[in-house]
Image (cartoon, rainbow, N blue to C red):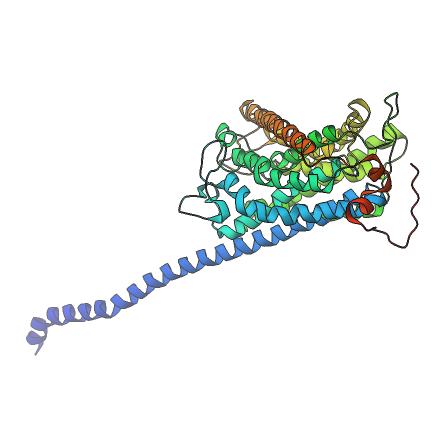
Length: 463
C-alpha cells in the first residue's frame, strides 16, 4: 500500500497543482481586469471632477461681468447708467457668439506662431486644439472657460470710454476685439505662439486679458478725447465724481469674489494648487487695497475710497500672472506695489497725459497688468510649479525669465496700440465714435437708449 502511494503521489500532486492553477487563472484574470477597470473609472471620475471645477470657475468669472457693470456705473454719472449696463450686457452677448465662431479658433486652433487658422465654430478635426491638450476636460468646457476671459478683456474698455461713446461704434469695437485683437494675443501666449516659445509666462492673464483690454482702452480714450468739462483751457483737470460709490464698492467685492474663479480656475482641473493660488490672489488684493489707501491718504490728506477700491483691483490684476508661481510673501509684495502704482498712474494719466479715463481702467488693468507680468520674472520660484517658469531674478534664476516677460509686455503693448488706433480710426470715419455735444450733456441713457436708469427721480446736472 505504501509502495503504491509512493508511486502515484507525484502524479496526484501534479494534477492537484494543475487543478488549482486552472481555478486560479480566472481569478487572477479577474483581478487584472478589475485593476484596469478601476484605473479607467478613476480617470473618468477625475475628468468629471476637473470639468465641474472648471465650469464652476467659469460661472464665477461670468459673475465678474456684473462686477464690472457696477464699478463702471458707480464711477460715472447717473445720466449714463443704462448705457454702461447695456455695453456690459452686449460685451458678453456679442462676445459669446463671435468668440465661438472666430475668436476661439484664432486663439487656440492649429496654425502658426502668430495666430490659429482652424477650429472655427469649435470644429475639431483631430489635433486642431493641441494647445489645450494639457487639460482633459471636454472641448466645450474649455471654450466656455476661455469665453468668459474674452468677455472680460472687452469689458475693460467700456469704462475708459464711458459717457461719450456712440453705442453702435462700441458694438463694432466689441466684435473686433473679441474676434481678432484679443485672440491673437492669446495665441501668442496660451495657444502655443511665439511668446510661449520664447519662455513667456502669464498664468491667468495679467497681460493676455487685462493689459490687452487696457491698452486698447487707452487708444479709445485718446481717439475719443475727454468728456465735456473735464479739462480747463489751461490744461488743469476737473473732478467729475461718480454718482454712486456704494454701487462701485459692491462691484469691487463681486470682482474680488469672481477672481477666485479667474485665477484658481485657470488650472482647468481640480488640483491641489488651487488652494495656493486662492491664497496668493487674496493676499495681493488685500495688500493692494491697503497700499492704495495709505498712499492716497498721504497724497490727498484723506483716505480715498475710490483709490482704495481701485487698489484692491490693482492687486488682483497684478497677481493674476504670477499667482501660481510665487510664494504668499511675494504675493503681498506684488499686491502692495500694484496698490502704490495705481494711485500714481491714475494721477499721471489724468493730470500729466490729460487722458480722460473715468474709471481708471488704463491704470488698474494696463499699468498693474504689466507690473504683474514683469513680477513673474522677479519673484517666480520653481518649487511652486516645477517645470514651468523656473526661478526668477530674486531667487537666483538670472535675467532670462525677466527678459522674456519684458518682451511679452512690450509686444502686446505695440500690437494693441496699432490695432486699437486703426480700429477706432475706421469706426470714427464710418459709423462714428463719439456722440454730439448736446447728446453728451443730456446723457446717453436718453439719447442712445430712450430711457433712464432712475425714472421718477429728478436729477440735476451741474454742466
